[in-house]
Length: 482
Image (cartoon, rainbow, N blue to C red):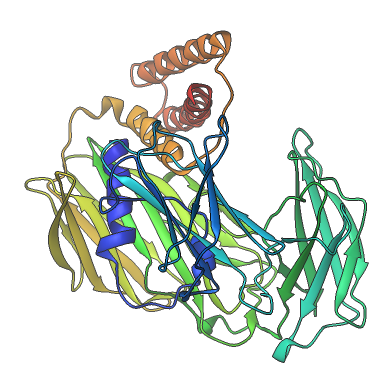
C-alpha cells in the first residue's frame, strides 16, 4: 500500500502532469525524485543557477552516506553529476558549493529497481530575493543580515524585522527585533549555530509580514537573506490553484486515503494579505484526522475540516499539502469540497481497480502502467471560486466495516511515513515494547466500542479519541523503526 502511494506520487510529478507551467525551480531544489529512467543504484545531481537553462558545468559535487568520505564527481555539459554502482540503499546526501553558497539535498533513499535524480538550484547572478539564507564568508560567524527589497530592487529602509529562534526541546520561541538601515539591511549578532536551533526572519511592512524560509546558521560563517517586500493587496481574486496541482487517491477496503497537492498561484505583482482570519480552504465534511504535509509555508495549518493560510502570499506559486482519509460503506463514496479559490483544472490519479469508476463533470480518464502497476489518470475542468469539487466513486472494494476506523489509523500512519524523511538513531527495544503494548490496548478498546450499549454519539466520540491516540502511537512506532 505504501509503495502504491509512492508510485502514484512519482507518476503524478514526473509523467501524468507533465505540461508547460511556470514553476519556480528553487522549490524543487534538494528534493530526491525516484526515476525509472535512471539505472538502479545510481544518483544523478543536476546543478542550475536560477533557471533550468542555466546549467552549471565543471562544478564538484559530493555524495556521502555520512559514514565514508564523500564521492566527488564533476558536472558535465548538462550540469549533471552521476554517481553509479552505489553499494547501499542510503540515506545519502548530495552537496555542492559555488563561491560562498553551499547547497545540500534532503536524505536520498535508493529504491531497489530504479535510481534517483535530484537538482540543486543556486541563486541567480546578482543574488535572489527568495527568502533563503545563504552563507557568506564576508559576514562574521554568528551574524545574520536580512535585506528588505522593494519594487524595482530598491532597498526598504526603516522597516521592522523580527527574528524568531526555536530550539529542540523548548516550547517557546525566542524573538529579536531590529530595523533596516538606509541599505535596507537589519543585522542580528551572537546567533547560535547548533544543529538543534532553527530560525525564521520576517519583515513587517504596512502590518503585513514577509517571511524568509526556515533556516539554520552555519558554523564559522555568517549568512545573508534577501526578502522581497512589495505593496500588499487584499484582492484574493488574483489567487487560483494553478497547473501542477493534483489529488492522489489510495484505495483500501472501506477507506480512501487522500493527498492534495495544491499550487496556490498569485498572478498579481503585489503580495496578497488574506486578512487577520487567513485564507480558509474547506475540506470534505467527512474528512478524518486531516493534517498538513511537511513542505508547507509558515502560517499554514490544518485542523478539523479546513486548512488555513495566515501569512502574506507572495507573487508566484506557493505549494500547499494536505492529507486526510475518508471512510465509506457499500462500495460507494461521494466527495464534495468547496473552494474559495478557482482551480485551473482537476488532475487526479488512482490505482486501477476492476469495476471501480470515478465520476465528475467533464472528467476524462486515461490508463497508464508504471513498474507493473496499472494506474488511472483523470482530468477535468476545475471549479470556479465559490463552487465545489464533486466526485463520485463507484465500485470501491469493501468488507466488514467493523475495522474501518482501524484502517483509517493505519492509512494515515502510512501517509505520514511517506511524507516524513528524517534521520533516526538506533531503536530502543524497551521503547518499542511500550508502544506495542499501548497499541494493543487501544486496538482492544476500539474493537469493544461497537459491543457497548452506549449511545451512538458517545461511541463516535470515543472512536475519534481512540483514533487520535492510535495515530500518535503508530507515528512513534514508525519513528522508532527508522
